[in-house]
Image (tube, rainbow, N blue to C red; front, side, top):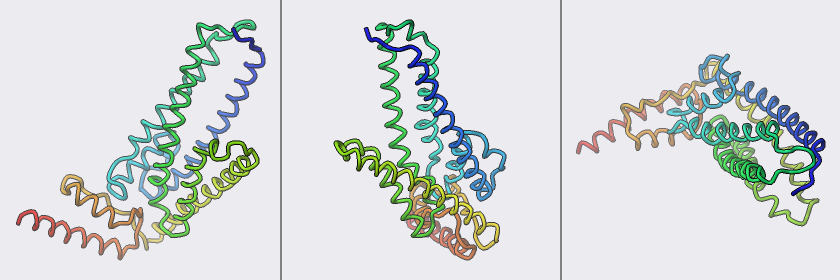
Length: 264
């Protein structure tokens, strides 16, 4: 048996839920605004940018055939939305199930709580790993300058370090706190940079001097040709108009060359 204060636990859960809702709300606002800018570039209806989860999925879907070979939106749904739904369900159950009655903690329900925490840990690990991968998938296409890509690499490095910060700074709370504050500050810098990058690219497209990369036709190209063309595009979402025309000529000539070699 464990002695537990029902009122204190209820207060902790309530505060945790309020903090979670605040974080989710601000995360939604930031994602919606960013998606609206991206949808202006991609030619998607702006209203769809305010649909949670779908807005991010749609960005990845539009990237397919332009900068990436696959639709990373599927990975996003599997690794972010599903774990978050499971975690949200667990938190909801934890708040509403009669796990705590009086001043005693029911041992028969301890297994449920342990399994729930295990799900939280596993879900957190999965989200953290794919957060690192999708960091490049999301922002590399719009970070088309050396300076912006350096910022992306630093953010990726800090993301990796944060996963192991508990071990790296073990026994030194001062350095751990300094790292946490530095990471938080740089995450704000990174957010400003990707908003500036997206806004800049939208302005370039609207000026008529830049054009969105055309989607490749997966029905007429094989896997090798698709990979080669996307690599030649240097993972950039938009390119100058003259460069895009020359690349289209290169694609046609390259396809003819590949077909000729295969025929021979």
